[in-house]
Length: 455
Image 1: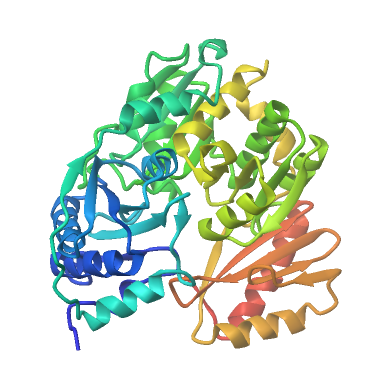
Image 2: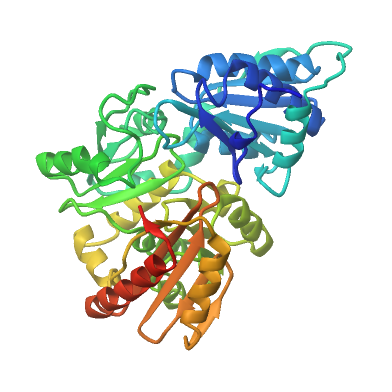
């Protein structure tokens, strides 16, 4: 029995854990062998992020891949959005990015896609790779694979700029906080290519994350952005997560836009640019999203949370755009993948067409008060979900598209089990703040009475 592989590093959407205790170079060598054995392709493209452990893990992973006779295309230090682009643009048989997204510095992981930017996940590919890694019994290959280097940055920037008309952007000021993650390398290349003044914050990739963690969901990580917007009298700000596949927007007053409002704005602009089309949004997005999609002659489609499901639905429906409340925004013409750079450029193009500040645009859309995500710890997810469903059985409607969504005339909630932790995630939205506070108190008291602990 192999003692090197910790089964807990396999998650629903990726492989991830703490370095070097939960995963290390030995782990990655075995993962390389397992991935190459499972995929049975001639070559695999591999890139890595700026974490301190990434270079040595890259070396170990690629050694394992080449040990099985599979060639490696070295993409160098890249972001996840570039990883997806490389997969779609160059049509590599498989792509791997070594990254742990927005997680703290001691984490690392990897994401895998096959040709056509098809992600491996908990129901496809990852269980088979996990079984091979745990068994750790690989026959000797007849010959080793070789490694070649591939530069993709110039093509990536050229591709990104095709989504807008650069010369027609206004001379807006935008502060971009990359948090010393991987997003800064792309935005640096955009400086001077449009009339927009890009004010860089922490563009230099640094795995120590010396200024703040590249996780904009936590308020403390957006304080520097807010300060810089005020100092430069900027029109808006962008905050990027560590691997640059998520975009968060802050208005000129230093207020962070909710993911539903950003989804609504981008959906509105994509429908104006491309005409009537299907637009996807996940089960946690607020009601403003389908309202805006319908208003601009789009066809709204509500889907499960998670990039693997969304990409699958987008391809099936040929959807022009998809948005998640968590800051993931997907584009049909970017190989159905998410990109903070391209969606940031599209947001700037939209704002350039307006004759009002972003805060005014947001005030017209941000009309449904919401709780934000509230987490509850429980030992028995299933029983709690059943009890909540029974408690609210008089609801106007109940669906289980993703977790449990309960709908009333003037409010609704979604209660969804986490894919990685023994947590229930509660989101509640209402027609006004009075109803919000009343129903939130009811929902929280119910969960506490069911032996849940608020975290």
